[in-house]
Image 1: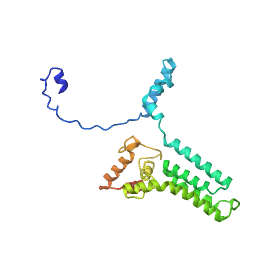
Image 2: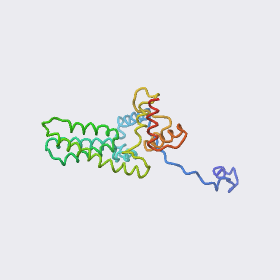
Image 3: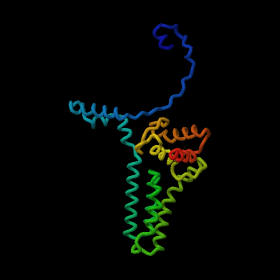
Length: 239
């Protein structure tokens, strides 16, 4: 209607929608598909071949590349923390310093916060510390070292667990998306076990847990807590 007024097709001030408030729009993000990425790579290669610009110049002025390049991504952080954990474990074995075992546990706890599935390795490492060769010390000292490692891990994980309980009333150690992640690789339409985009999940990881929760509630027909939603996706994976 406003455009029609500007073009002289309607009298001025006759737009019936001029006092209607707009709906608030939510920000959206969209990732390039594999086909689009291939086309982008071909275009950049052609530009470089013709000598009009270089990939470095394009990346230097491409805003998403600048933004994402400055982010501290979880894979790099988890690799760093896992390396620190292994270094501290090796130092604890070589130097026989009791204080290094809780420090290794703290590093392991921080690593688990970046990759929740690494929680499965904590009891394995604690058992290895306890049952390693007798040449590494008497059983009593190995019990103390294993307990020190577990204490360090627990010290770190207690903070997010307490926060999650205060917020949701559920004892969730780190995150509640284990069931959703398991479902992604083990649902009936996934034949390879690799990651796949599900139709009810936004492509942006920021909204993945929200969308899984909403879909779990839709399937159940009632509201669910985060822990209940995660458990429901485990169940759906086996059904």
